[in-house]
Image 1 (cartoon, rainbow, N blue to C red):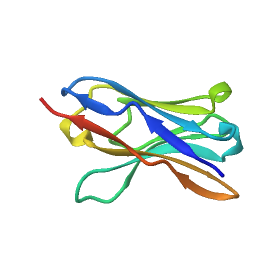
Image 2: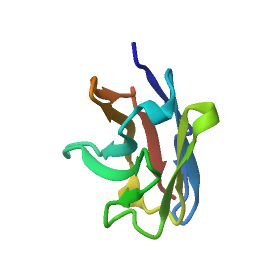
Image 3: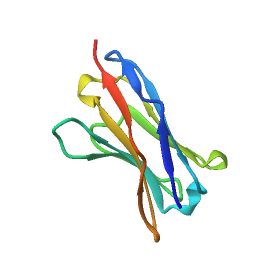
Image 4: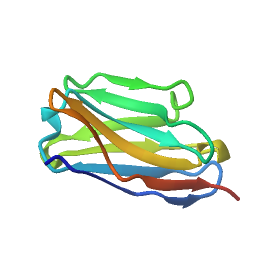
Length: 115
């Protein structure tokens, strides 16, 4: 059974940085892609970033230039480096992965950006 476990969330002041991690229970390259979504209170879950098996990366407009997604295949882990964080980045961040077997989600990690 595929499991995704996020870590690295927390509280940070505006302009600060955080790194989220998503550890998969299987090889990360077994997925067509892995990525991150987020959901703020009262809002729909939205796409943040994605890394394809071949290494191509995709970003939402709100993440472009501030967030970086990377994969450490040896550790079956995907990272999301977030910098210049803004209060509007406050949300629960969810790891997502997909392959022919289906879609998989982590339990989420909270990121709070406030002064």
